[in-house]
Image 1 (tube, rainbow, N blue to C red):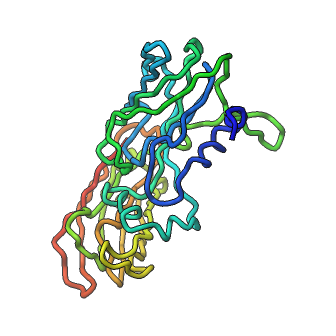
Image 2 (cartoon, rainbow, N blue to C red):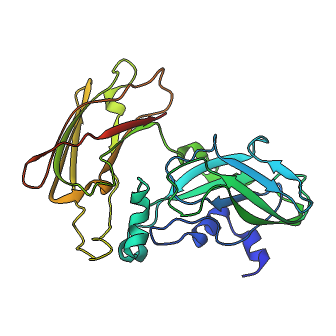
Image 3 (cartoon, rainbow, N blue to C red):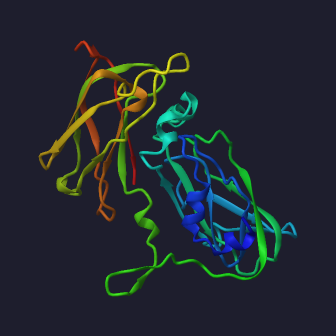
Length: 306
């Protein structure tokens, strides 16, 4: 593929070209090519904690001059992508590739950084230095790390990723729709090899701040099989999750008749942006059982990300 092919390829086309299909997550696997003023995307591993407000991105140009893209307001978005659920790698990767993200306490995701190149950067070979400031990156590459970038001669333009509605009017992409909504995460730990057969949770929230009808519960699924020693069977991580709310409390019931490893059981309590205050999610009670119905004395954790 020639450089001109990269220049003419839409950002997200190039992005998906670079995405790996297994559960491992990577940093940029090919040099980034752009002109001054262009928009580029870089894969920065797999993390649910990285945010555009806190990530550090510095462009060092051909002359050794550093450009702080965060301070310049050129960091446009940080968001996560998930592979096609039918992808071969999602089901038949090695155990390590499948498990590594869950070991880092999140589902398999590929984290993408979108930045603009300053309009007055000189042409030549440079590099980006990126620090995600997170402790859950499953790429195996520590921060800060560097990604090569070649600045071509000429002046580029910020990509708006325009789309058209039914009337033919162009609209620019709204990256905030791709970034996480405010949520509380509930997990059951991931290092003690505990198998859960059932659980019931009661979560309180401030109904004067958050309308219970606006709460949604997202529960990621796992296709991890067995362990290093044995592959195991598909279906061992199945679970059924039922939830309801009465306007004052949220009730969650979980059934996993075959038993599910605690690492693969987590859920996110979602709510819209723009609340007048904190929803004050509070896990007020929990009962957890093994596959035989005996109670397990395990306390789930709840953490909130506004």
